[in-house]
Length: 295
Image (cartoon, rainbow, N blue to C red):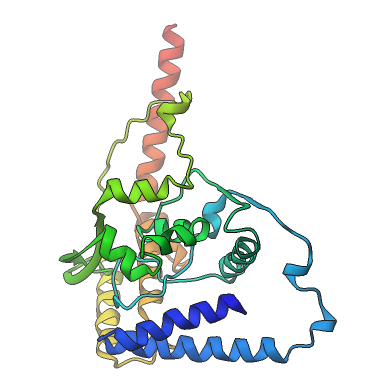
């Protein structure tokens, strides 16, 4: 329950100080949902189950910890790209267990091991730091996500390609880190960083070859349809249960890979990308066999 109360305090802080109406509305909805959870927990018959804190677990070692970094931070920044915008139940469950052990053991007895603490979103670094060192973040007064971003992040306004791929749109994005030495100083108070150079790992040298793939006629037609659907969603002329940006961007990804992922009536000829992959693989195999024969 302490975990939920802490989250409620953060949300109330956002609601009080944010000037963004959409953010305030989201905060109110989250507060309402958490208050209901808190009421349910208070009514629950504790004689019918065993609490996690009563299991006697005093240490938590999490391997492949990057599987638990998908937590949306509580923020008043509004719609900013580069900030994780979804939260899974398993990650909330992990955070609750971590907090329970930390509260009982002076913020110790937690180890996270991962090769990719940050992969998709810059805000993932805050998530990892908040898992392991919430007490240290609080000491430096950057325990709330917005204060952390204010100290170590830079948000920029720029024009970016729309999800439909046919035009540009204004976008706020968490672009880069600032005050990086100070950020790493805090991070390294609990992080033991081992890089490839430090470990001298034997890895093959990669040669990246970018290859352009032209759109087929059917891809162009489908893309035009996605553009019109996107405009309808933005104008609010379509029921979100019938069509929405998540559905549109999902179809756009499938469109770029193979149109048969959208409809089995399409053929291999409706997408150049896979044919290019096949041609390149064939060319590589033929070249390798010729080299071996010459030996």
